[in-house]
Length: 406
Image 1 (cartoon, rainbow, N blue to C red):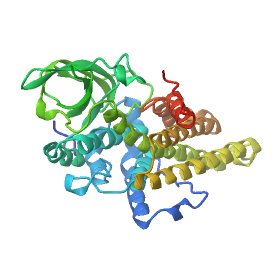
Image 2: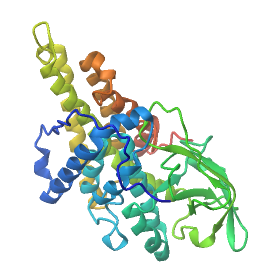
Image 3: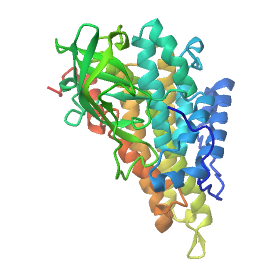
């Protein structure tokens, strides 16, 4: 599939300049290396130049801006932690987090596209794939030549992926794949899908399914009020013949897809804070400019209360994800710790978006400001890659040793 490498002519670029200034109340920059800050600042500049001027237009039209794909690849957003010999950037996990933070500061849908590509498509090929699969797919995915999607969630099986009904049957030279997946980011335009299905023994296996395989379709989901600048769809498999060389050989069972979700959840923990920071920065600036009763509304106690609580929660979240990044770099971060950070960051972001909308009043619901778009996007982020409640139960099971899922 050919990718758009130039900007479509009908894009409306906003004349409103992106004045974003990142909050850093506790000088957390001091905890970052010079390389971390260089990477973050380069991504921030790219978002200001390429995403901010066009994102409201694409969100209003409910279209994914495909012309951004080469730029996302160029800034290292696709598989940042994948080694360079496979086309990745070979970065550490704090760099990965900062990249996701800055992209989601622009829009959750754009970050979703990058997260899927890196954490849910490239990571399983790197972690569970054969050397031949790695060499064939990873460089093309890192460059954006190929785009991918991740097929786990089914129409009737979301939080309980182990009950999936998508299945494969051994036909000798190939597997016959049947079933369907739902709410799949990138699926309408993806070249490949990492699909999880049960074999004849009921064991979950991962497969690389390519667009063009007979019986494989990916209809787009329309009518979304959230993640409008993200392409979401289904994956439908009707007797699809998948070559055996396309099976991921180095993993069996639910630990395969769950390992991928840990990667994605880690990125969301950082990314959602980016959305929170954008809403806070917007509200803070507006509170200094909006005059009511003869003075800026930022001078009123209730507005200061909102802003003070926002920056407090952002600061707590920043410290949490930074520490998680250190643990991830040392390979010591547990899945439960990642769950806690994902849940905390999204809750922080969605609360801040709602409070920021209040500060902006009527202007908060317009596309002139990013707050309502962030708020709607976060209504998806709060339930994908594990719902808010599921992450609470993961923490609960971790601290009590008792499983509330059964």
